[in-house]
Image (cartoon, rainbow, N blue to C red; front, side, top):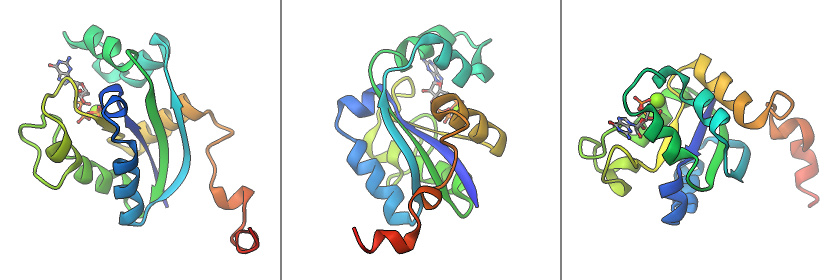
Length: 151
Ligand code: GTP
Ligand code: MG
């Protein structure tokens, strides 16, 4: 089963979209493995966006993503990396289809509400960057299904 890293960006958190975004991933049938509201420092942000370090907007991108709390999540499911990118929509919200998260909620590519990993390799790197290796495991490990019925 695949895992991916999904993050509600500072604009999405400020606009109160965390619940709506969690709802869409839950309704799709994906499993939430970990989640945390956090304000990240520049080194975590630069590592997260390392593929863009030569881009002219890299400084602005790091300024934005460190400007306020983000809601970081790890999700698990069948083909979750590709499917979540479809649910998120195109980078530039003016090109994102209605029904996608960016199509429905975002207006500018500099502030496009949500991030999703684009490959297996980046998903692993991003989950580790935000949650560490120890937390990269399933809820099932800590809380087997049989035990949930008694709670
Ligand atoms: P992420 O899920 O955030 O990685 O978006 P993406 O995979 O759809 O796009 P990509 O990785 O190519 O770009 C990363 C982020 O850089 C985008 O989500 C945008 O928010 C931001 N970005 C792209 N172009 C520009 C730009 O011209 N200026 C600024 N400030 N940000 C940009
Ligand atoms: Mg990207």
